[in-house]
Image 1 (cartoon, helix red, strand yellow):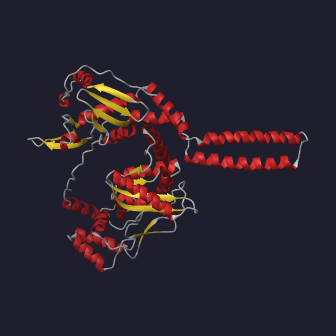
Image 2 (spheres, helix red, strand yellow):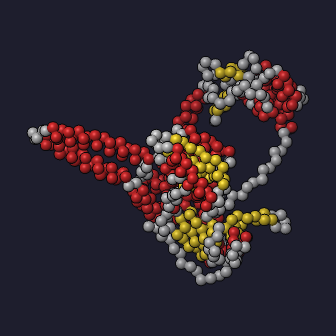
Image 3 (cartoon, helix red, strand yellow):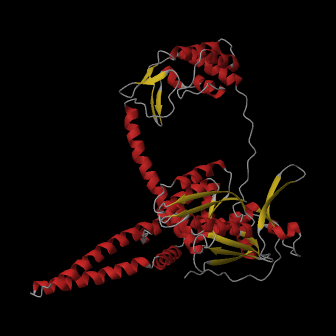
Length: 504
């Protein structure tokens, strides 16, 4: 796997050696785990409570290029000190296929932390969605007035002072000419050469491309149609191309359009990195193969069996069956109100254990306020003195400092309410278990590891002591009642194993 290193120090009193030390330990971590480091990003004298960090933002932007799989940090607080910032950007990296790992800490501070981190991502997602809704409301109001909402301006138009689109007298005639030439039988190459010979560029001043022409020929704005999201106004802007000419061009485009090549679909193996052989403990990886009739079969196979690393004889298991079983059992767990209540209680305790500074500051604040009240009472009773006044001033300064520390701590580690946790967990009950993205979300959030034996399946979840053992004997019995066939499991019949499911 390819990795990059992110290093940071926040104080101006720190030196370059701080960066060097972080990079050294991260490099050693990468070597121990077989990762290839391809680059380093470093921010100097920049606080981790903000995302306004040049190298950090460059790293986030570069992650979209799919050039690396991991971001290695010395400790998690190098990535971010603010949990909202951390959740927001970990979510962005995750969408780009990149994971954050710490050279000196467990990334989620235990399996329990995965749930907390997922909730914070959910809160950040909610905030972004709420902000997006507010922005869209404003844009929709503009659309009702057929105002230009921004974006790439179509060739042939300009925006007037009132934000309406108007034909550009310099370029609009060339747009009309492009439609006439294509209707008359000219090729895209001939049209491209014509526009280049006239020195026509796009609205950003860049050369015209084949894609530019194709987009131009199918852009309904040229017949005066204003469109933004659900708002469509047929005569919302001045037309450049007559409707009959536009429709003839659309017919020719459809006739000349070749069927796009079908991209080879990549099958998602949802239990990758989570499914392990119960006999030898080795990871079980996704495999596929074709039968004689050309049908594709997908399954998970013990890596030790494939590479002959030991004498393990574990049989492969069909992908659909094992994933369906894990999803079904996880959904059953989430449908249990008592289990939801137990998980919320565990997470609330975890939050309290996670933040040890806040209770200490709050206790010190209470003690300081009591001392202030005592001095004020003494002064009111006629016991005023310079010593008491000096002590009062000192205590008031201490109080202000503690209030600032408490607010900073709440910002870095905001406490999630039990009500929000319950609401967040209940959302998973509405997932469509036939949707691959919903299934992935469910497994990534709750499933820690799955151990597959010949006669049973051991599920471990991302909350303390959360385990569930399912026997294939019971599964087959239930499946047969439903008319399904699970013989593909290939498990020998043995005595049923007792189901275990506990949460502390």
